[in-house]
Picture 1 (spheres, helix red, strand yellow):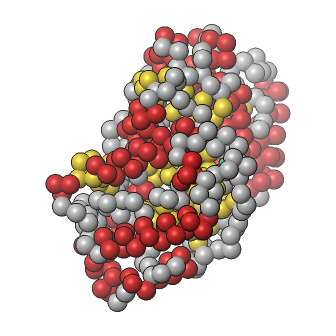
Picture 2 (cartoon, protein in one colour):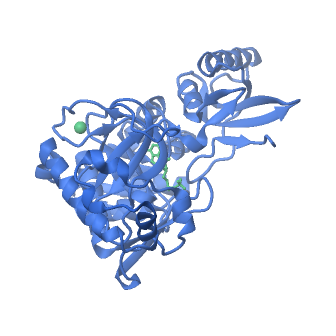
Picture 3 (tube, helix red, strand yellow):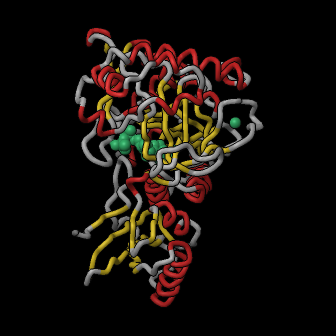
Length: 432
Ligand code: ADP
Ligand code: ZN
């Protein structure tokens, strides 16, 4: 059942002791980096005074801007000779940041992915097709190494080329995949067009869904189509990448591997911790990283800690599905809106296809939101009246959630731009 039973089910007291011991080692290391050496001196910080988790607040937060400022090597705590791998973020919100790993770092990260995939039910008898971009992006090699560690047969398919993906699945009897959720939906239309039914014609049973925000409704839609169980996988390159937090078979929140990370949830404005169970920005500290440890990193991702134990027996705390990143928040007529709210509603409405795009404009000093929504190909057989009923329903449903009235344009399936990587959901044409 467990990849590492002792660690995964360790009682909270021992787990916190382990965290403090590893934090101590991390603090001793980070002083050697240009960045933290300077920060600690500026703050006059005496790391010996950090003795309990409650003292964590005295440590400085680290931001993406800090990483950019120290580009490329200013966070290293060892010589460059010891570094064996570099990765980078996807650059979704600006210039990408780079992260460096020693051999031990890669081994620890690989273990976390093996632990995560094993938890979701993957075994050495499985055939694992990794449909993520390889290269600098962490989703490719990260999962690849983890799956090999379990001993599964790995097909390093990479992203895109939908027909070939389906062919590989059929020829090699793929049982597990790693896929970006928006791409899984796109691929479903290719399955339908080619007359192949994944439930009938493939052996798929497990999918790791990650790298971008997606709602529970979207997960269900994907699971229903493919007939597999989809597990939410969360991570960011600054914290290695995937393997940081992962769903267990209960599918109720993602366990954060707390032997490797300390997490906090703070109010992004006051920067103070929120009460446990409340939503805020996730902050994470690496505990085992040698080459480039990072303290209290501001992930900009919004989530909450799910209080209470998980029925699976693992003691590592769970976080809720990410509701968005602070950067994604749209402010329209003073209302804060996240793309995922719109996605969640759309995915509930029959007839809505697999892709949508939000366009923001400013007309006569007024913010205007247009949502372009793809409609399922065969749903209406071209009945204009039915389409208008659907359009109005979407306007009403969105309005009841986001409190402003969007324009809704229905468009044909496959007409909106699609991405092999993370989906682009918002185009902001407002100029200040
Ligand atoms: P970038 O920040 O440039 O996109 P990364 O490739 O490191 O670079 O992506 C990490 C980010 O992707 C996370 O901070 C988060 O916003 C998003 N992300 C990753 N996995 C998930 C997930 N399962 N659910 C929601 N968002 C996710
Ligand atoms: Zn669990």
